[in-house]
Image (cartoon, rainbow, N blue to C red; front, side, top):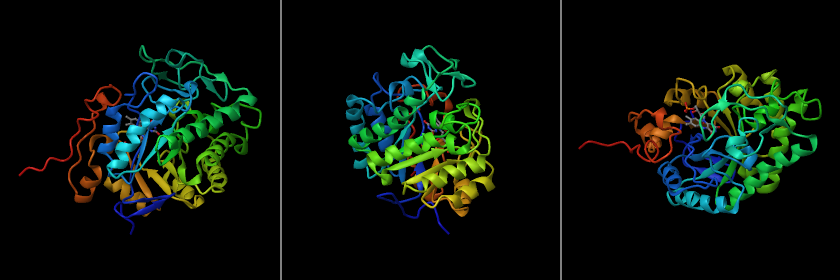
Length: 357
Ligand SMILES: Cc1cc2nc3c(=O)[nH]c(=O)nc-3n(C[C@H](O)[C@H](O)[C@H](O)COP(=O)(O)O)c2cc1C
Protein backbone atom coordinates (compact mmCIF):
# COMPACT_ATOMS: atom_id res chain seq x y z
CA UNK A 1 0.00 0.00 0.00
CA UNK A 2 1.08 3.56 -0.69
CA UNK A 3 2.41 5.39 2.36
CA UNK A 4 3.02 9.05 3.13
CA UNK A 5 6.73 8.36 2.83
CA UNK A 6 6.79 7.03 -0.72
CA UNK A 7 8.24 9.24 -3.41
CA UNK A 8 5.95 10.76 -6.02
CA UNK A 9 6.52 12.45 -9.38
CA UNK A 10 4.50 15.67 -9.59
CA UNK A 11 4.69 17.67 -12.80
CA UNK A 12 8.42 18.14 -13.29
CA UNK A 13 9.25 17.52 -9.62
CA UNK A 14 10.35 14.41 -7.79
CA UNK A 15 8.82 14.63 -4.30
CA UNK A 16 10.59 12.74 -1.49
CA UNK A 17 7.28 12.11 0.32
CA UNK A 18 3.54 12.59 -0.14
CA UNK A 19 3.03 15.16 2.60
CA UNK A 20 1.90 18.54 1.30
CA UNK A 21 1.78 21.69 3.40
CA UNK A 22 -1.76 23.01 2.78
CA UNK A 23 -2.17 26.68 1.81
CA UNK A 24 -2.71 28.85 4.88
CA UNK A 25 -3.15 32.62 4.93
CA UNK A 26 -1.11 34.12 7.76
CA UNK A 27 -1.52 37.84 6.87
CA UNK A 28 2.03 38.84 7.79
CA UNK A 29 3.07 40.49 4.51
CA UNK A 30 4.68 43.94 4.57
CA UNK A 31 3.04 47.05 3.11
CA UNK A 32 2.61 46.77 -0.64
CA UNK A 33 1.91 43.02 -0.39
CA UNK A 34 5.60 42.18 0.00
CA UNK A 35 6.93 38.89 1.32
CA UNK A 36 9.21 39.32 4.35
CA UNK A 37 12.27 37.63 5.88
CA UNK A 38 9.96 36.08 8.51
CA UNK A 39 7.89 34.50 5.74
CA UNK A 40 11.09 33.09 4.20
CA UNK A 41 12.05 31.62 7.59
CA UNK A 42 8.55 30.17 8.15
CA UNK A 43 8.45 28.34 4.84
CA UNK A 44 12.11 27.30 5.05
CA UNK A 45 11.40 25.68 8.45
CA UNK A 46 8.85 23.46 6.68
CA UNK A 47 10.95 22.54 3.61
CA UNK A 48 10.89 18.81 4.39
CA UNK A 49 7.33 18.74 3.02
CA UNK A 50 7.03 16.88 -0.26
CA UNK A 51 5.52 20.15 -1.47
CA UNK A 52 4.71 23.46 0.23
CA UNK A 53 1.71 25.40 -1.04
CA UNK A 54 1.90 28.99 0.17
CA UNK A 55 -0.85 31.10 1.64
CA UNK A 56 -3.25 32.65 -0.87
CA UNK A 57 -1.53 35.36 -2.92
CA UNK A 58 -3.56 38.00 -4.75
CA UNK A 59 -3.04 38.26 -8.53
CA UNK A 60 -4.20 41.89 -8.64
CA UNK A 61 -5.31 44.57 -6.21
CA UNK A 62 -9.05 44.02 -6.62
CA UNK A 63 -8.46 40.32 -5.89
CA UNK A 64 -7.02 40.98 -2.42
CA UNK A 65 -9.34 39.46 0.14
CA UNK A 66 -7.72 40.30 3.49
CA UNK A 67 -5.43 43.05 4.74
CA UNK A 68 -1.85 41.82 5.16
CA UNK A 69 -1.84 39.23 2.40
CA UNK A 70 1.01 39.14 -0.13
CA UNK A 71 0.66 39.74 -3.86
CA UNK A 72 2.16 38.70 -7.17
CA UNK A 73 1.32 41.69 -9.32
CA UNK A 74 4.23 44.09 -8.88
CA UNK A 75 7.96 43.83 -9.56
CA UNK A 76 8.67 44.57 -5.88
CA UNK A 77 6.49 41.64 -4.85
CA UNK A 78 8.35 39.34 -7.25
CA UNK A 79 11.69 40.45 -5.81
CA UNK A 80 10.43 39.93 -2.25
CA UNK A 81 9.28 36.37 -2.98
CA UNK A 82 12.70 35.49 -4.38
CA UNK A 83 14.13 35.24 -0.85
CA UNK A 84 11.28 32.92 0.15
CA UNK A 85 11.76 30.53 -2.77
CA UNK A 86 15.57 30.66 -2.32
CA UNK A 87 15.24 29.80 1.37
CA UNK A 88 12.94 26.85 0.66
CA UNK A 89 15.15 25.55 -2.14
CA UNK A 90 18.30 25.98 -0.07
CA UNK A 91 16.67 23.76 2.57
CA UNK A 92 15.91 21.14 -0.10
CA UNK A 93 12.20 21.91 -0.54
CA UNK A 94 9.74 22.63 -3.34
CA UNK A 95 7.10 25.38 -3.27
CA UNK A 96 4.00 26.37 -5.25
CA UNK A 97 2.31 29.76 -4.75
CA UNK A 98 -1.45 29.65 -4.21
CA UNK A 99 -3.00 32.29 -6.47
CA UNK A 100 -6.13 33.51 -4.73
CA UNK A 101 -8.53 36.09 -6.17
CA UNK A 102 -11.06 36.92 -3.47
CA UNK A 103 -13.75 38.20 -5.82
CA UNK A 104 -16.68 39.36 -3.69
CA UNK A 105 -14.90 38.36 -0.44
CA UNK A 106 -13.05 41.66 -0.18
CA UNK A 107 -13.70 45.23 0.90
CA UNK A 108 -13.04 48.77 -0.44
CA UNK A 109 -11.39 49.64 2.91
CA UNK A 110 -8.79 46.95 2.15
CA UNK A 111 -8.13 47.58 -1.54
CA UNK A 112 -9.58 51.04 -2.28
CA UNK A 113 -11.70 49.32 -4.94
CA UNK A 114 -15.21 47.95 -5.09
CA UNK A 115 -14.92 44.15 -5.08
CA UNK A 116 -15.97 42.31 -8.23
CA UNK A 117 -17.87 39.07 -8.65
CA UNK A 118 -19.89 37.11 -11.17
CA UNK A 119 -23.07 38.86 -9.92
CA UNK A 120 -23.94 41.76 -7.62
CA UNK A 121 -24.63 39.50 -4.64
CA UNK A 122 -22.83 39.96 -1.35
CA UNK A 123 -21.09 37.10 0.40
CA UNK A 124 -22.69 35.98 3.66
CA UNK A 125 -20.75 37.05 6.73
CA UNK A 126 -18.15 39.62 7.67
CA UNK A 127 -14.89 40.21 5.84
CA UNK A 128 -11.68 41.38 7.47
CA UNK A 129 -10.75 45.02 6.89
CA UNK A 130 -7.98 47.22 8.31
CA UNK A 131 -10.43 48.46 10.98
CA UNK A 132 -11.87 45.05 11.85
CA UNK A 133 -14.60 42.78 10.50
CA UNK A 134 -17.33 44.43 8.41
CA UNK A 135 -20.33 43.02 6.54
CA UNK A 136 -19.31 41.71 3.12
CA UNK A 137 -20.13 44.43 0.56
CA UNK A 138 -22.16 43.98 -2.59
CA UNK A 139 -19.65 43.40 -5.40
CA UNK A 140 -19.85 44.89 -8.86
CA UNK A 141 -20.89 42.26 -11.41
CA UNK A 142 -18.13 41.87 -13.96
CA UNK A 143 -19.08 42.96 -17.48
CA UNK A 144 -18.87 40.12 -19.98
CA UNK A 145 -15.91 41.87 -21.62
CA UNK A 146 -14.05 42.05 -18.27
CA UNK A 147 -14.29 38.39 -17.32
CA UNK A 148 -11.40 37.11 -19.52
CA UNK A 149 -9.10 39.75 -18.01
CA UNK A 150 -9.80 38.45 -14.49
CA UNK A 151 -9.23 34.87 -15.71
CA UNK A 152 -5.89 35.99 -17.18
CA UNK A 153 -4.89 37.58 -13.87
CA UNK A 154 -4.15 34.06 -12.58
CA UNK A 155 -1.82 33.49 -15.53
CA UNK A 156 -0.04 36.82 -15.06
CA UNK A 157 0.52 36.00 -11.40
CA UNK A 158 1.79 32.54 -12.41
CA UNK A 159 4.34 34.10 -14.75
CA UNK A 160 5.51 36.35 -11.94
CA UNK A 161 5.59 33.39 -9.56
CA UNK A 162 7.94 31.51 -11.87
CA UNK A 163 10.07 34.67 -12.20
CA UNK A 164 10.22 34.72 -8.40
CA UNK A 165 11.53 31.16 -8.33
CA UNK A 166 8.36 29.24 -7.48
CA UNK A 167 8.12 25.68 -8.79
CA UNK A 168 4.53 26.29 -9.85
CA UNK A 169 1.16 27.70 -8.84
CA UNK A 170 -2.05 26.35 -7.36
CA UNK A 171 -5.12 28.30 -8.50
CA UNK A 172 -7.48 28.80 -5.57
CA UNK A 173 -10.72 27.42 -6.94
CA UNK A 174 -12.06 26.54 -3.48
CA UNK A 175 -13.66 28.03 -0.37
CA UNK A 176 -15.96 30.65 -1.89
CA UNK A 177 -13.41 32.88 -3.63
CA UNK A 178 -13.67 34.09 -7.24
CA UNK A 179 -13.39 30.79 -9.14
CA UNK A 180 -15.67 29.14 -6.60
CA UNK A 181 -18.14 32.06 -6.97
CA UNK A 182 -18.37 31.36 -10.70
CA UNK A 183 -18.97 27.64 -10.03
CA UNK A 184 -21.73 28.50 -7.58
CA UNK A 185 -25.45 28.48 -8.33
CA UNK A 186 -26.32 31.33 -5.93
CA UNK A 187 -23.29 33.68 -6.23
CA UNK A 188 -23.39 33.40 -10.01
CA UNK A 189 -26.75 34.39 -11.48
CA UNK A 190 -25.33 35.37 -14.86
CA UNK A 191 -27.36 34.63 -17.95
CA UNK A 192 -24.42 34.90 -20.37
CA UNK A 193 -21.84 32.24 -21.28
CA UNK A 194 -20.38 32.29 -17.71
CA UNK A 195 -23.59 31.49 -15.81
CA UNK A 196 -26.52 29.10 -15.77
CA UNK A 197 -25.87 25.55 -16.96
CA UNK A 198 -22.86 23.58 -15.72
CA UNK A 199 -20.96 24.07 -18.97
CA UNK A 200 -21.19 27.84 -18.41
CA UNK A 201 -20.43 27.86 -14.68
CA UNK A 202 -17.17 25.95 -15.17
CA UNK A 203 -16.02 28.22 -18.01
CA UNK A 204 -14.21 30.77 -15.82
CA UNK A 205 -12.24 28.04 -13.99
CA UNK A 206 -11.27 26.39 -17.26
CA UNK A 207 -10.22 29.72 -18.81
CA UNK A 208 -8.11 30.61 -15.77
CA UNK A 209 -6.39 27.22 -15.93
CA UNK A 210 -5.93 27.36 -19.72
CA UNK A 211 -4.37 30.83 -19.52
CA UNK A 212 -2.05 29.68 -16.72
CA UNK A 213 -1.00 26.57 -18.65
CA UNK A 214 -0.26 28.84 -21.61
CA UNK A 215 1.83 31.12 -19.41
CA UNK A 216 3.91 28.65 -17.37
CA UNK A 217 3.12 25.15 -18.66
CA UNK A 218 0.82 22.44 -17.34
CA UNK A 219 3.53 20.86 -15.16
CA UNK A 220 3.62 24.07 -13.13
CA UNK A 221 -0.17 24.50 -12.92
CA UNK A 222 -2.54 23.04 -10.32
CA UNK A 223 -5.97 23.91 -8.93
CA UNK A 224 -7.70 23.52 -5.56
CA UNK A 225 -11.44 22.81 -5.44
CA UNK A 226 -13.95 22.39 -2.61
CA UNK A 227 -16.83 20.41 -4.16
CA UNK A 228 -20.09 21.33 -2.49
CA UNK A 229 -18.39 23.72 -0.06
CA UNK A 230 -20.59 26.37 1.54
CA UNK A 231 -18.03 29.05 2.50
CA UNK A 232 -19.19 32.66 2.55
CA UNK A 233 -22.75 31.63 1.67
CA UNK A 234 -21.78 29.77 -1.49
CA UNK A 235 -24.16 27.13 -2.76
CA UNK A 236 -23.20 24.61 -5.43
CA UNK A 237 -25.97 22.64 -7.07
CA UNK A 238 -25.40 19.29 -8.84
CA UNK A 239 -22.09 18.76 -7.06
CA UNK A 240 -20.97 15.46 -8.64
CA UNK A 241 -22.02 16.62 -12.12
CA UNK A 242 -20.42 20.08 -11.79
CA UNK A 243 -17.12 18.85 -10.37
CA UNK A 244 -17.10 15.89 -12.76
CA UNK A 245 -17.61 18.15 -15.77
CA UNK A 246 -14.88 20.50 -14.56
CA UNK A 247 -12.39 17.67 -14.04
CA UNK A 248 -13.24 16.23 -17.45
CA UNK A 249 -12.43 19.61 -19.04
CA UNK A 250 -9.26 19.97 -16.95
CA UNK A 251 -8.13 16.46 -17.96
CA UNK A 252 -7.29 17.97 -21.37
CA UNK A 253 -4.32 19.57 -19.61
CA UNK A 254 -1.63 17.47 -18.01
CA UNK A 255 -1.77 19.53 -14.80
CA UNK A 256 0.67 19.02 -11.92
CA UNK A 257 -2.26 18.10 -9.67
CA UNK A 258 -5.81 18.73 -8.52
CA UNK A 259 -6.25 19.45 -4.80
CA UNK A 260 -9.63 18.53 -3.29
CA UNK A 261 -10.95 19.46 0.13
CA UNK A 262 -13.26 17.02 1.87
CA UNK A 263 -16.36 19.18 1.47
CA UNK A 264 -18.52 16.54 -0.21
CA UNK A 265 -19.56 13.03 0.79
CA UNK A 266 -16.80 10.47 0.58
CA UNK A 267 -18.46 8.58 -2.29
CA UNK A 268 -18.65 11.83 -4.31
CA UNK A 269 -14.94 12.48 -3.75
CA UNK A 270 -14.05 8.90 -4.65
CA UNK A 271 -16.04 9.36 -7.88
CA UNK A 272 -14.01 12.50 -8.60
CA UNK A 273 -10.81 10.53 -7.98
CA UNK A 274 -11.91 8.21 -10.77
CA UNK A 275 -12.74 11.17 -13.04
CA UNK A 276 -9.30 12.72 -12.61
CA UNK A 277 -6.45 10.85 -14.30
CA UNK A 278 -3.58 12.91 -12.86
CA UNK A 279 -2.07 13.42 -9.43
CA UNK A 280 -4.63 14.07 -6.72
CA UNK A 281 -3.95 15.87 -3.44
CA UNK A 282 -6.67 15.44 -0.79
CA UNK A 283 -7.13 17.59 2.30
CA UNK A 284 -9.18 15.04 4.17
CA UNK A 285 -11.16 17.11 6.71
CA UNK A 286 -13.67 19.96 6.61
CA UNK A 287 -11.60 23.15 6.18
CA UNK A 288 -11.43 25.02 9.51
CA UNK A 289 -13.54 22.28 11.08
CA UNK A 290 -12.97 20.99 14.60
CA UNK A 291 -10.93 17.97 13.51
CA UNK A 292 -7.58 18.57 11.89
CA UNK A 293 -5.87 16.29 9.37
CA UNK A 294 -4.04 13.47 11.09
CA UNK A 295 -2.21 10.30 10.18
CA UNK A 296 -5.36 8.16 10.26
CA UNK A 297 -7.26 10.45 7.88
CA UNK A 298 -4.21 10.60 5.62
CA UNK A 299 -3.81 6.82 5.45
CA UNK A 300 -7.55 6.41 4.87
CA UNK A 301 -7.39 8.70 1.84
CA UNK A 302 -4.22 7.16 0.45
CA UNK A 303 -6.17 3.90 0.59
CA UNK A 304 -9.04 5.51 -1.34
CA UNK A 305 -6.71 6.60 -4.14
CA UNK A 306 -5.31 10.02 -3.18
CA UNK A 307 -1.69 10.40 -4.31
CA UNK A 308 -0.79 13.05 -1.74
CA UNK A 309 -2.29 14.41 1.47
CA UNK A 310 -2.20 18.04 2.55
CA UNK A 311 -1.87 18.98 6.22
CA UNK A 312 -2.79 22.49 7.35
CA UNK A 313 -2.87 23.15 11.08
CA UNK A 314 -0.59 20.21 11.89
CA UNK A 315 2.08 21.71 9.63
CA UNK A 316 1.52 25.19 10.99
CA UNK A 317 2.33 23.98 14.52
CA UNK A 318 4.95 21.35 13.65
CA UNK A 319 7.68 22.56 11.31
CA UNK A 320 9.16 19.03 11.48
CA UNK A 321 5.78 17.40 10.73
CA UNK A 322 7.30 14.94 8.24
CA UNK A 323 9.76 13.62 10.80
CA UNK A 324 7.11 13.47 13.54
CA UNK A 325 4.76 11.47 11.31
CA UNK A 326 7.57 9.18 10.17
CA UNK A 327 8.70 8.36 13.68
CA UNK A 328 5.32 8.53 15.44
CA UNK A 329 6.25 11.49 17.65
CA UNK A 330 3.37 13.47 19.21
CA UNK A 331 2.14 16.58 17.40
CA UNK A 332 2.01 20.03 18.98
CA UNK A 333 -1.42 21.75 18.83
CA UNK A 334 -1.88 24.89 16.73
CA UNK A 335 -2.82 28.10 18.55
CA UNK A 336 -5.74 29.73 16.67
CA UNK A 337 -5.18 33.06 18.46
CA UNK A 338 -1.97 33.60 16.48
CA UNK A 339 -3.23 32.43 13.08
CA UNK A 340 -3.83 35.97 11.82
CA UNK A 341 -2.24 38.01 14.58
CA UNK A 342 0.91 39.19 12.78
CA UNK A 343 4.43 39.06 14.20
CA UNK A 344 6.68 36.08 14.73
CA UNK A 345 4.92 34.64 17.79
CA UNK A 346 2.87 31.62 16.73
CA UNK A 347 4.65 31.86 13.39
CA UNK A 348 8.35 31.18 13.84
CA UNK A 349 8.12 30.04 17.45
CA UNK A 350 6.82 26.49 17.00
CA UNK A 351 9.90 24.36 17.71
CA UNK A 352 10.92 21.07 16.18
CA UNK A 353 10.35 18.13 18.55
CA UNK A 354 12.59 18.49 21.60
CA UNK A 355 14.16 15.13 22.42
CA UNK A 356 15.06 14.90 26.09
CA UNK A 357 18.36 13.28 26.92
C1 LIG B 1 -4.82 29.80 9.40
C2 LIG B 1 -5.42 29.16 8.19
C3 LIG B 1 -5.40 29.83 6.99
C4 LIG B 1 -5.91 29.23 5.83
N1 LIG B 1 -5.79 29.88 4.63
C5 LIG B 1 -6.09 29.21 3.48
C6 LIG B 1 -5.75 29.77 2.22
O1 LIG B 1 -5.15 30.86 2.10
N2 LIG B 1 -6.09 29.06 1.11
C7 LIG B 1 -6.74 27.85 1.19
O2 LIG B 1 -7.02 27.25 0.16
N3 LIG B 1 -7.06 27.31 2.38
C8 LIG B 1 -6.72 27.92 3.52
N4 LIG B 1 -6.96 27.32 4.73
C9 LIG B 1 -7.55 25.97 4.77
C10 LIG B 1 -6.44 24.90 4.87
O3 LIG B 1 -5.70 24.81 3.67
C11 LIG B 1 -7.04 23.51 5.17
O4 LIG B 1 -7.93 23.17 4.14
C12 LIG B 1 -7.77 23.46 6.52
O5 LIG B 1 -6.96 24.02 7.54
C13 LIG B 1 -8.13 22.02 6.93
O6 LIG B 1 -6.99 21.19 6.95
P1 LIG B 1 -6.22 20.83 8.34
O7 LIG B 1 -7.18 20.06 9.20
O8 LIG B 1 -5.10 19.93 7.90
O9 LIG B 1 -5.80 22.10 8.98
C14 LIG B 1 -6.48 27.93 5.91
C15 LIG B 1 -6.53 27.27 7.13
C16 LIG B 1 -5.98 27.87 8.27
C17 LIG B 1 -5.99 27.09 9.56
